[in-house]
Image (cartoon, rainbow, N blue to C red; front, side, top):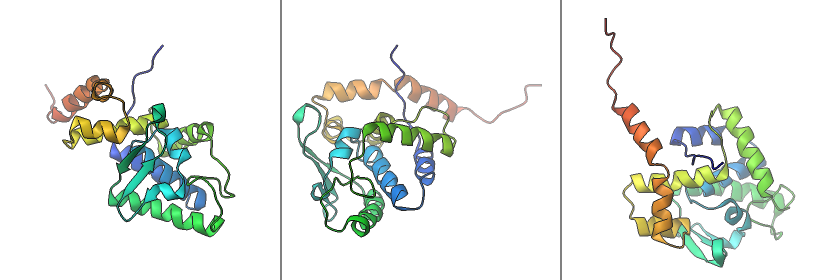
Length: 195
């Protein structure tokens, strides 16, 4: 049975980030969440990043091998870069110039997708998020936020690394019932006693 697509509100994602520890691992996990949420990366793309793939001066991230072997470059906002900078500084203190993936263990080892999935579930529970928390939900949230901000479909496609605009359109339409329900709830007037 296929699960309903999940997305999160900005306060939910911020609660998820606030549930991270204050040490280096927490900084890394916040950087990971930012790459999935604000960048729309797939979890495998985020874990494959090398330090040289990030260009903080131009606010760009290069994904060398996305789905289907396609490379792309995405933009991140300054707020996202501030979060990445905190991890980059902690990473440099821990590893110096040692070669390691950008998102790595405190000893420079590879992170695995199973770790990310378990960590996000744990952080979601700690943050009090009642829906299922997973990496692809953060990616969905990125696409929906870009759409709400009026970003053109081809630009969203490029950010997400989809092969076609039709895929992006399908991605966004999968959330239509949820969006319609949110709109209906937001448009309700104040509660009034009918008696």
